Length: 160
Image 1: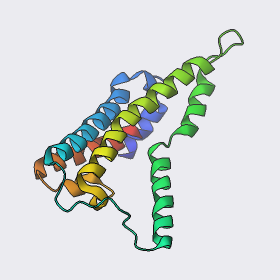
Image 2 (image 1 turned 30 degrees about the vertical axis):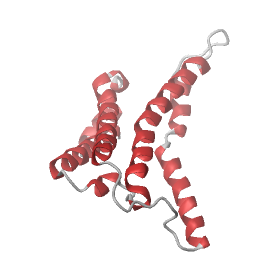
Image 3 (image 1 turned 45 degrees about the vertical axis):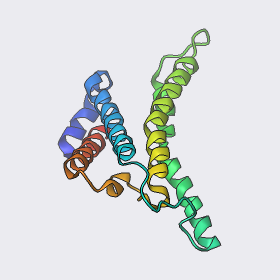
């Protein structure tokens, strides 16, 4: 696996290979859509609870900070934005700030459109019984969960 990564890192035109850039994007859209549509299809589960999982104040505070960490991890990549902006030609008449701002807005909007339905529908259907990975909560159909997990593997391998 290290050889393809080494090769693509050394290729000057790597960023122009649109297929490599759109594949992780399409996989993210597909597996998030499968997750929330399958959850929605199952409907609200019996005996669903929407309260806190933790039974103590310390547990609640820990879960809150853990959730903040999950959100920060989901929206990681802000340091890459600065690297990309540094490579865009910029002049006082045409600064790179405009195109970069538009790109960031589009990227985070697409990310939101992938993650928010999974979060909201998953919580509505399973309540506080949803696992950190909603695919674990879905359980069936097994073939669909296996397919979505393969999308995740391909997404992770191609993203780096």
